[in-house]
Amino acid sequence: MAGPRHDPSLYRERDLVPIRRALVSVSDKTDLLVLAGALAGAGVEIVSTGSTASTIRDAGFAVTDVAGVTGFPESLDGRVKTLHPGVHAGLLADLRLEDHERQLEELGILPFELVVVNLYPFVETVASGAQGDDVVEQIDIGGPAMVRASAKNHANVAIVVSPESYPSIVQALERGGTTLVHRRELAARAFAHTADYDRAVATWFAEETLADEDLPQHLTIRAERLATLRYGENSHQRAAIYTRVGGHGIAQATQLQGKEMSYNNYVDADAALRAAFDMVKPAVAIIKHANPCGIAVTAPNALDPIASAHLRAHECDPVSAFGGVIAANRTVTLKMAENLRDIFTEVIVAPDFEPEALELFKLKKNLRVLQLPADWKQEPMDVRLVSGGLLLQDADRFPDDIESVAAGWQLVSGERPSADEMQNLIFAWKACRAVKSNAIVLAKASATVGIGMGQVNRVDSCRLAVERAGDRVVGSVAASDAFFPFSDGPQVLIDAGVSAIVQPGGSVRDDETIALARERGVTMFFTNERHFFH
Image (tube, one colour):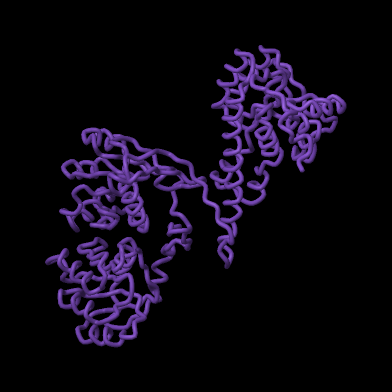
C-alpha cells in the first residue's frame, strides 16, 4: 500500500511559482550577464559556483557561493562542488507537501525555484580532436545530477539548460513567476539535454574501443536534425538530414549558394567525395545516381591541375554527366568553374573555392555549392540500417602507401608494366572501389574511359564498360572489384583491346582466366583483396 506521501490529497496546487532563489552554474556563458542582471533586478538571490560566480560578481551583481550554502569547499579540482544535501534538498523538495516544507525548515535549507545549468563542453572537446584524459575531464557529473533533480521536481523548480531559454525566464520574472506549463516544457528539454549528453559520452567510449579486436557490445549513435528536406528519394517519402555529433562529413558542409539540398543530392555528394578523395593527386569525380560517370586525376604538367582533372573526368561519359554531382579534392579554380559554364550540374562540393569561381557560379542560380568543413575526413566506420537493427563495419579504405602494396600484387600473366602503366592500374583499382558492384572500370592515363556497374553478373558489367568506352577501350587497363567467376568477362575485355587487368583473384576457375590472359599476352595482377560496394 502506498504511503501517505503518495496520497493525492496531500499535494497543494502550485501553478505560478515566484522566483526568489536561483542556482546558476554554466559552462557556456553566452548572455549570462543579461540573465544575472534580470535576476538581480528582480531581487532574486543568486547562488553560483566557480568561474560562473566570478563572472557575475565581477559584473557588479551579488552572488552567494555554493560553498557558503553547503559549508564545504569546492575540492578535487572542482570535481566536487554541488554534490551535497544542502544543494540537492533545495532542488528536490516538493513544496506541495507540508512535510517537505517542514523538513527543509528543520534542516535550515532554502529551496530553489530556478536552476540554470549547462554542462561541460564534452562534445566540443571531442570534436576538437582531444583524446584520453582531456576528454574524460569534460564528463560532467554534478551538472547532470542538478539538471535531472530539478527536471524531476518541475512542479516547483524551473530548469534551464540553454541560453536560448533565458528570454522566457526574463518574461517570467516580469509576470511574477513561472507557470506549470512553462516548467514542464523546460523539464522536457532538460531531460532531452542530459540524454543527448549521456549518449555522446557513451558513443565516445564505444568508439574508443573500435581499435580493439572486438567491436563494441553496445553502440549509441547520436544525431540532431539539421533540416527537413522537401522529400526523400521520391516525392511521397518524408526526409530529413541529421548531423552526427563529432561528424566531419557532408552533413557538416556549408552551402554557399543554390537551391536547398535534396535527399538524393546528399547521397550523390557523399558518393562523389568517396571517389575523389581516394586519390592523392588533384582529382574530380562526377556522380549520377550514386555511381561514377567519370573519375580522373590531373594530366601531367597541367597548368591548372583541378580543372584538368575535371575535363578528363567529364570526357569519360559526357551524356551521363548532365545533371551530375561533382566533388573535387582540391580548391575549385576559376578555370574549372569556366569549364562548368555550359554543363548542367546539380551540386559541386570541394574543400574551398577561389573567389572568382564563386562569382562565376552565381550566374548558375540553381547550382548548389558546398564547402567541406576544414576538419573534413573520411569516417573510420560504416553504418547501415537494416530492418530491426543496423550493420557496422570498418570503412573500406586504401592505405596511404598503396604503391608499396601494389608492388606486392601477384603477377599471374604477362610482363610487369612500366611505372606509368602501374600508376594507371593503381588508379583503376582505386576508382573501382567507388563503383557499385558488380564493378568494372576501364582507364587510360589515370582517367576513366568506361565504367560498368550495378549488374547482377560480371560479364554484363564488362560489356557495359566496353560499350561506354567505345574506341577508347583499346590500350586501356581494366579493374574488377571482385574475382571473375568465369573467363567470359575477361574474354569480353581482352577481345575489345584491354592491355592489362587487375582483380582480386580467388575463383575456383582462376586457372582458366590466367590461361586466357597468357594466351592473349595480357598482363594480369591478383590483389588478393576485393572492394565490393553495394
